Length: 99
Length: 363
Length: 176
Image (cartoon, rainbow over all chains, first blue to last red; front, side, top):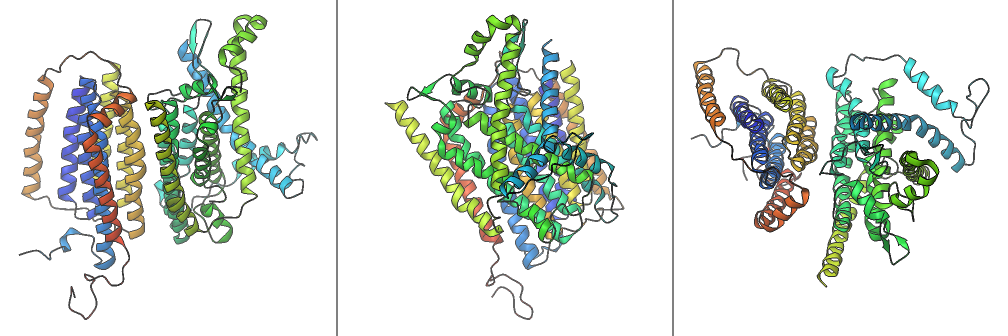
């Protein structure tokens, strides 16, 4: 029962992160939405450790965290480049590829 | 009954943690004075009893309590309020994983003098030291002051750079003692002997780890020679410039509590923890039992507690001694040391330890 | 029973923290509430028996990744975002209304699912390490390579370089 509550909570958190990603214009806030979605997935894996009493859930959490770290680093580096060279931080102004 | 014992241990650890900061201010000023061939504060007393100037911290605490709690109007309200709490809370929480004695049964109930004993062991320590970075960062930013912002960001960059070296230098210890639990590590250190006569302490098994860890904890707690963040208060401004009175002292409570916790960690990992060099817990009980009967466990616990406090105090004295001996690093020298010297050294140490352990277990 | 109630309260607080992150206009406030959410999440992992995950959540996520976010926010002076929309359009209402039945249906499916009864033994750190280096060795090495690549990429992109070809120069044509 504990694990099921956590899985449902993870579902709701995923939706919250998804809406944050869609409705925010600034890149930092969108990246926070992505982090929320990744954490929702982590919560579901942790609920899996409660059910299956396995080491697999925590290993997947470890891998997802490593991927989130890489993606945050690269995304923030791109944000720094953008804000330093183009003075852009909103995605509304990134229109170079608009056809 | 176990719950009552746990609460007693928790209260003891908290009380010890809270009293480190005033005592350390006194120790610093007296030791600084002795190093500089002068006397230091020895005049403040209660009713004429000046015991080596121990009245000074009491006077300082009273003064800080009665100072005006300035609420400047130009600071970010919520973060200005929260920033002093973060170093204090994490510093005191880091003390909770240190074992202050061996687990024993006292009148039938199990008494374990370690407040938090989870499978993750001393990784909780790193969690607390990672969270203490936010105190410095938020304090610098919420002061709405360019100099304190830069000081705070530099200090937090320094802290997270040295966290890498800290973690990597402790992996050989985990490889040697095969466990993350501090109780188990202290047990292993007191119950076996190297070469027949040396106690199996971490400092003899992994000396390079000890030196790297000692250097990195100076950087983690913003102590000289790595205290560019605080030392800037003497030059331009540090991240503490907008804080006065009790808020300022909360920062130092946190810093000294974190120093104390790191001393505890070094003692448990490298210096044998609460155990005296050639006596194990069982032999101590064996000695004390005929004299005190069933109160022998409590007596042994007090002996072990005192041993650990003595070892932690030695490391704290090393902290203070280094502060008044070595000049301060420049910021680029500091970052270069962390990334170019300490990190490769820790990696090579880990590699060599793994090779030696693998070879000796393969034979 | 107490565990379930505590876990429910923690999950509700966690949802509140994450919703605050989505709504709050200041960037530092959003990061701070996300850090609070991560601390709660670590607490929940501890409740679920995932002790290793709880500790590395604080060390890695709240203590390293979010520090980098907070650094970037403070150094770049990310502007306070205006509240997104004052008038709510049909698309917003429809999206939220359509997501609620999805949530409810999936929740009902989850609640009716029979969890397999596996005998409970505590997962020790040694089991995790054993599994990581024996069963999951290949993903582990690939992740280390990925981290190295991300490190090189981040340094290359964010490096202060005067001769960058894609910088906007006043009065010159772009990209050359």
